[in-house]
Image (cartoon, rainbow, N blue to C red; front, side):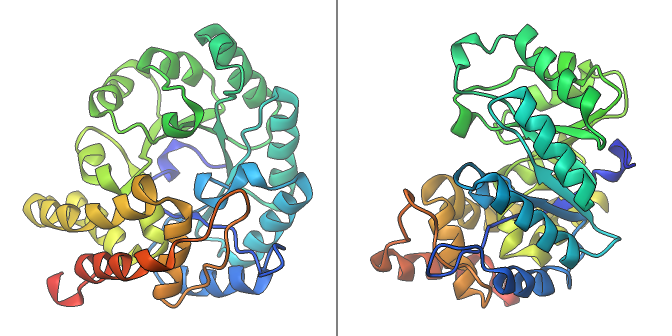
Length: 301
């Protein structure tokens, strides 16, 4: 069983491939892993926000876990997104994924009744999941999607469980990341949840990142991580500044449709999104292509 010390480096939150009929396209998934596995990635997150997790049923989630496990080498971690609205369903999905071979579960906070999600409720929820889970748990803080931003104090209270080993924080608050590092009194990994703040996150104690950007630019994300680890801060800063506009384009600006369109432009399988999401607008594709070309210009590394 893995511990916090294994949560280092770069992890893509892989998109879910659908075919034109809306079914999971296993061959497209395999094709993408063949590309990703060529790079120095630490592992993968299956069914994160970029995996359109909330739009899949339980059978489809299991299928994705099975296909991913067959295509992820043993030396790379398989993280799975299992956060559901109920504690019961979260436990069931977590242990179902564990039985398939997942290494750890990334658990999004339940958010539908957000007004009732006080610290004591969230602590009880995460601890119940951690008690029942047969794999370690990673907290997932995603305020843009949940409408909730976990405080450093709440994260520290949740982390006070031996089976909770880290957090993916997509909020981008560096002061809070630093506070979490101070408040949690055990080995605990913080993973930056966006390529836009990978370098700032590393600077305040993050051990790596789960980055949408690493689906289309794994070599650049891994290089940024390595530059920081090697103390080459000027080069890391330059690369971070170059990558941030592309990361913003495929996340906060245009989201999953743009990520899948970018994958197609990079020779990967992107495919359609699932309704109610809409496909990326054709009129915007030249702009996206320009952003990609500027960020990933091989003569600029």
